Image (cartoon, rainbow, N blue to C red):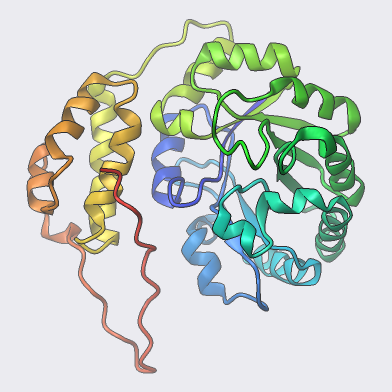
Length: 343
């Protein structure tokens, strides 16, 4: 059995991947999707969204990272998959699960589940473009509006060459509304001859147990549940090994939050850094009373120095964000994407 950290745009970036994989229990993770829509992407795009490529495609904790691509053009996806592999990607994952309207309007993500023949062409093109030792995997939902075509989509992906499927057990229309239909994961497993990883609504060890019983899956992908409970994978790993799961204490979580804030402060402009911190605190507050109290204290705070104090940190000039000068060609470094504040 393996436990994976899900790719989540604007949430599970490399900073979050670094923190969560350090907690333990995660066997592999996936980059945020890299959108492919017009030609071969520059190397800088891959390195910005998947900087682990410069470190053996592993997080600081040593957790392997797969590169996820999103798009609808088989040839362009194949070309960009080649580039990702040249940069060190050990696995190429294809996104057919994103339900976001902005993504779907440009023919990306879950909207393609209405075209199983296109799914097959995409996977086949990417598979043919890569060395045989580099697996191609795919993440899918159960369909656009209904799960009626889920099995056809799963077969199309596997027939095209996918070595593993991650199934988010909801349709595009359902978005992230509960429940997740884990029974459909069992049906997909019966329809294909590759490993099927279960994803959706796993917020606790008990959820994992129920998902395992209903889906029959041996591999699981954790998304928002892991962001909200950073030790969830470790708890599940303990339960899997027959040990009593131990919940992380606040004095163990706070140093991770402090590290996350230091790096966020260094990487993002002061205008955006507080929103990134509060975004994570919102999720942590679901299960941790100390995180909830901290969020209540800082929810309207926008000053980075006062946020330092709220986290028990002394200002460190070395951690302050500073705009970088243009190079001789007049080019500025690619900035990190501004993220919406959670408050």
